[in-house]
Image 1 (cartoon, rainbow, N blue to C red):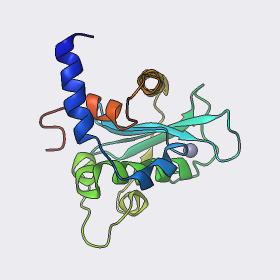
Image 2: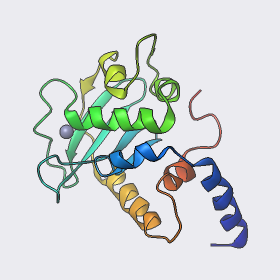
Image 3: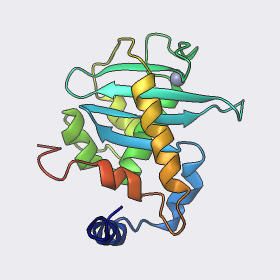
Length: 168
Ligand SMILES: [Zn+2]
């Protein structure tokens, strides 16, 4: 990494300061991003500490999918988004704010929408399998960032978030 990049990182890390209350949620949803036209990320299994789910929701079409990182379909998908997608959406709202997430996904948030789960309920969602590999590899890069000394957990998401035009 060059000095110029390092300086850019430091500027971003100032912007990435988040309320400490958020830290409690990180174990549940270790990775969330608005990227590649999707809300996507990784959600821990409630029952198995070794297992993670890769969940995604496409902006505009609201096609969703959830599977393990080995592409095994999530057992919670029964004609509706599973609890992992709800947790992912909730975490995205905490991280980016409901307005930004709603604009990115192209859903009319309206009044009374305070969480990602509320937002999901407003969408006409449908299931459409998508490979987990791309999202999971981004998660692994995210973990590599987390292992850097003095990094903040919010930094990688902000680093990847497109600087211009992402939500309009
Ligand atoms: Zn799931």
